[in-house]
Length: 501
Ligand code: HEC
Ligand code: HEC
Ligand code: HEC
Ligand code: HEC
Image (cartoon, rainbow, N blue to C red):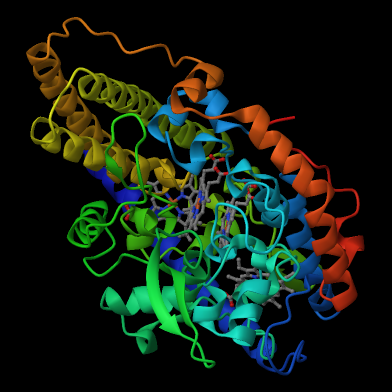
């Protein structure tokens, strides 16, 4: 009997949740009418200066600006020293922090050691594509120069153009203020996955504006010829969604295309780097399946006198349980914090085992090559490592998946562990065949020891970065100010935190 009561109570909560959700969607249509009669921020093109929007929408602007409060640098390489080994030979072994507020995107992309220390527009390790999820200046540039030109060249090509952090023009049409998809690659990804763009609902849009960036992507090499007849190669952000929005579907997509992000310098594995499949993981969870959108939890409605608006302070919903979770659920704040904490702990336990096993698999594979293993002997092993690391990365890289999709996160971590263990078992035999028994992988228990194994030269990288910040970066900002696209006032009082000084 109790069991049925419980079930009934459960469904009542769920139904109440759904009703509230429907109400909130209906409430939104009135807001939308208001938006339709709203002032035009910019008649043509994208208004990338957030402070221009503030003139018409002060509440949204003020709450958006609070993303500045999330300024803490949380160095993941110190926290999880397995990471530099897992990413040996790839940029992420140099510098990798947990996400901060949207306000910091431009500072973070210029500060990260991954973008290096370019000395002019054509130097540096990364392509222009790296700017793509950082600023409303990106859709502005795509409109101005065309998609393929935008994706051609080095990251440093646009330092003087892409200067405003994620803001209004990333999610809203500058003329109508309606929600809009400013990134062409999301539209293409959706179409490739079988979604018809004309079927997208307003509630879908409340997640899809986020999916423009919180999604898995890769840089697709694309040859093209510009209007002057010059042959160029673009690195185009592409969503690998043609086989569906699952880890296995994307793994097959990459395998079929014979694609790898880099070759691991220790194990020689052709690797995949999961970016941040936040939307895809979210879609597999119960909230998405019940029609809840990202904005329902990360941008709840707030009431200010007679005015109701969306809180644009995008952050952890746990900072605001009363206006997020408790909009649909009835438990207490303490209960909800505990629910999320338990999910995080469960993920962390399996995550740590997976990282350890994968790091050891790379090091043991490195030893096997050193001992004289052949391509033939290593082929299957490297495939296990590739697939295992892909699933591990896919499950955790979006940071919120442990909560958005707990079952899928734990499933992928289990499979990742199994594949890493299989590789390690096979490596024991290969090593023995080449006369190596009882091999123990070297220590990687600190960021320093792990980066030494990965061949990361931190002093050199930091010196290059400091030189870049003292010279070229200053030049970029000066030019942007002269051009009228950057107002230095907006950066006043910003601390310049990094993981390396
Ligand atoms: C990451 C995406 C995103 C960014 C950045 C963003 N918004 Fe929004 N905005 C939304 C979403 C989602 C809604 C809810 C829309 C709905 O359901 O109708 C919204 C709603 C609004 C509304 C309608 C009224 C309301 O509050 O619900 C206005 C006006 C608005 N935003 C202005 C702005 C301004 C001004 C900025 C920049 C300071 C901004 N937005 C930045 C996603 C964004
Ligand atoms: C234009 C790209 C872009 C869009 C659109 C976008 N994000 Fe983000 N988001 C990012 C990036 C990049 C970061 C990491 C910023 C950093 O660390 O500098 C981030 C960080 C976050 C964080 C971490 C904040 C913190 O304080 O720790 C949350 C939560 C988040 N985004 C949720 C959302 C939601 C919800 C939406 C849609 C309403 C959205 N984002 C839309 C790119 C985007
Ligand atoms: C049902 C509520 C809910 C929905 C819907 C939701 N989230 Fe979250 N999200 C959370 C919670 C809770 C956390 C964990 C916060 C924490 O650990 O403090 C989180 C964490 C995150 C984080 C990691 C933040 C960090 O700093 O580690 C990002 C990014 C994020 N969500 C983005 C999204 C995006 C994008 C969507 C839609 C595709 C979405 N969320 C939908 C509740 C939600
Ligand atoms: C817009 C409504 C809405 C919001 C906001 C919301 N939820 Fe939910 N939640 C639901 C619905 C609907 C379900 C599914 C109920 C079912 O079908 O069993 C659900 C299910 C759950 C479950 C059970 C499934 C699981 O993953 O274990 C938990 C726990 C939960 N929500 C926690 C939260 C937390 C924590 C927050 C705030 C960060 C939150 N919810 C915000 C509507 C919402």
